[in-house]
Every structure is written in structure tokens, then in C-alpha cells.
Length: 287
Image 1 (tube, helix red, strand yellow):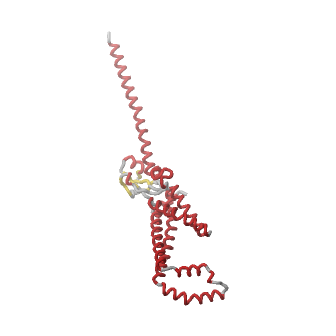
Image 2 (spheres, one colour):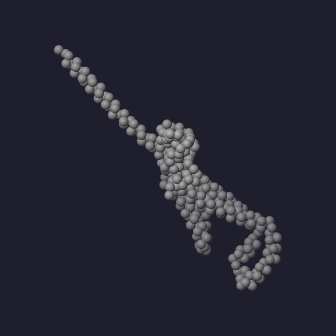
Image 3 (tube, helix red, strand yellow):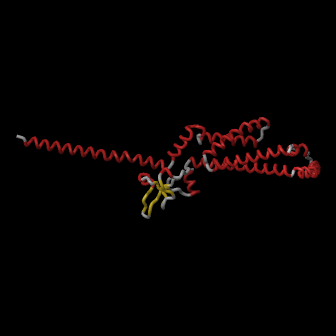
């Protein structure tokens, strides 16, 4: 699959006209009805005026090829982070409401719980041994101060997940570092939880976090891995359309110089032949 063409099909072409004459000649083409300019994403020549122009250094950075696929993968991880943030925010709101209405909630539970327990008993279920019942009973024993601290922790976690999601969605390097560090710090807790009890959900979440950490470190070259940011930026420049145009323009220069060099040597040889002929004529005229 050509990810660059796919990206242009979704978002449109991104053409650019550089101010440098050599690059302008490489990236522009004359048409009978006007001009065409090379797309920075897919490399195709698009008829019409350029979308951007200016020095080559000011050209917009457009993901293409494998980098465009990487952006899509990071956005999938960003969606997962946003879902975690929504869940944490919902838990925080529920805890705050519980603290504010603790007395009324306890009154409602004391009033309705026997009815619910008797109903499930008639159906053959013992509610008092269910995990949900034990969890609710344990929550009711917590002091309002502890519940408030848990709610604050849920808010902080939700904000952190939103920051990670935004950074990954925009493919910013700070977002990649934030997601990698925050996820790595949570891995020991997830592994410890698995040692106490193994569940499919915990295994899936652990696998997703491990994959995210390895993917960010290896492909984005974080913390100096595989050459670090310098090597990462160099790869992006080498794979960019402007980089290819600069290489093509550079490759043409020696060819033009070498084509003029033989002419100069030819001219020098002709002058030498002419001078030799003149000297011979002068010698012939001497007595």
C-alpha cells in the first residue's frame, strides 16, 4: 500500500514552490496552460499554483511513506489514551458525587439492598458472595478523606492520559516521550497485579503498553536509540521530496562542469596548434 498516495487521497496534495532557482526548476514543470508543482507528500506533479512557497527551509513538514503509517498507528494509541481518560474522569465524578451524597446513598442502599438480596436469592443467586457486593461494601467503609484522595488521583490520571493522547495524535516528540515514560512507569504495577491474579483484560492492557513502549523507542529513536533524534531527522530529510530534489540538483552540477571542461581543453589545444603553426612559418622565413 502506498501510504503517501493514500494520504493525498484523504487530505489532498501539498505543493510547494521553493525560492531557490535550482530547486524551483526541479520541483516545477511548465504546462501549456500554466505550471505544475511537485507534491511534498506523494511526489506527483499537480497542475495549478503552489499551495505554499518560500525558502526550502520554510517548507512544511509533511509525513509520507512509512512516517504516514506511523502517524496512523500513533493515533490508534491516542484513541486508547482518550478512552482511558474518559473512564478515569467518570470514576472521579462518581467518587465526588459519592462524597457529596454519602448519607443519602447509604440510606438508599440500606433501604433497597435487602429487597435486591431477596430477589436474587429467589433466583438462586447469593448476592452477598458476589465481587460487586464485596466491592460496594468495602467502598462504604472508606472515609470521605480517602475517597476524595482517590478522586483527585483519578483526575490527575485523566489529565495525564489526555496529554499523552494529544501528543500522540499530533505526532509531537514531547508526546512520544511523555507516553513512553508514563507507560513505562505503570508497567511494574501491571505486572505486580498479574502476579496476584491473571485476567484477560490485564494481559491485553499489559501487551498494549509493552508494544507502545517498544514501538516508540525503536521507531522514533527515543533516548538516543539507533542514533537518536539526529538520525531520525536525517532519515526524514533523506526521504522527503525536497531532499530528493536537492540531491538531483546537486547531481546535475558536476555534469555541467565536466561538460564545459573538455571544451576548454579543446580550446587550449587549438591555441597550441595555432601557435605552433605560426612559429613554424616564422622559422621557414628565416634565411
